[in-house]
Length: 416
Image (cartoon, rainbow, N blue to C red):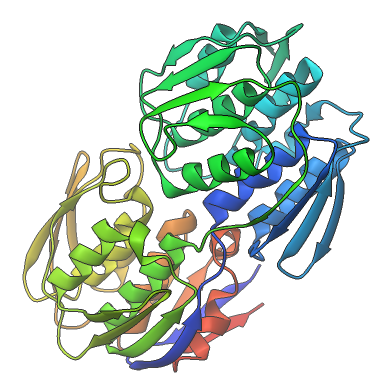
């Protein structure tokens, strides 16, 4: 099993190119199931989750051709309307094949998903929404069985804001008969990116970027070309790295217009930033100022950045408080950071951090995707050597993080 060996205390300097967004790429790849035409995608990141999704889609009969960051999908010969447990168990986003398969072929068999251990994240909102569209759904032996003659448009109000739920129902509604209204829809930029692709494929969608999506169903969708948006979470993670370790880095291929909540908090921390049209130059010459925040749905502070900001707060000059409102089990990095000398206490869904002058390297273990990124950040700021174990979590959502950090002066290498 791979690990990362990090010698901390090095300032970062240089340029990093940001990859395409994992959370946009996964639903966009599933949209290939909606058409018999060619979907030509660019800026697709090299990630373990993307490879898993392409393998899952390939076993349905979807034709997959990959050349670097370009992926071409063709859905003219799909024969297997199933997502088996072996493929779904490691990645929750696999549930996103349910809506497209059901809408286009009238049936689907999808295993209940697995993925990170950060919370239960039930799929009941997906199921309720598809039932409202006219699907007959049963759950047997750990599988969701869904059937319909033809989905019919309706008004759906989800009980909670759900990103993958919105994406699944949006894809299904594009081929439903009549008008579908999705109320309480997720507004995340990755949902918006999917909606723009669907429109390019011939879907009729109004309200893109708002919490009310109105979809007029069409008989079929066609092929399209689309570039996946830049990964705002990857970009903010590297900004947290320079905020914690110090230095002067420039990020390329960024989308700063979808990063307001994170950028505002980074400025509060003392990170000096020069924002370009698709770039950010970030400089840090002092100890960070602590910031308190509460995670919430977009455009609020993203739960996917909670752990990374907490890592910066561990070396900040003062105390801070972090409240997690999205996932009930997303503080598993706390005990590992405390192994590095951090002073963090938790009470329910709130963490109280007292900044220390210096973290000290130690062996630590990653427990989920964003937790692993936060441990890398803490290790970069620590004195001495840190060994980060179980980094397969990291590879699910970061494209060669150690290569990008090495290029800006970090002493970090992957070992077997």
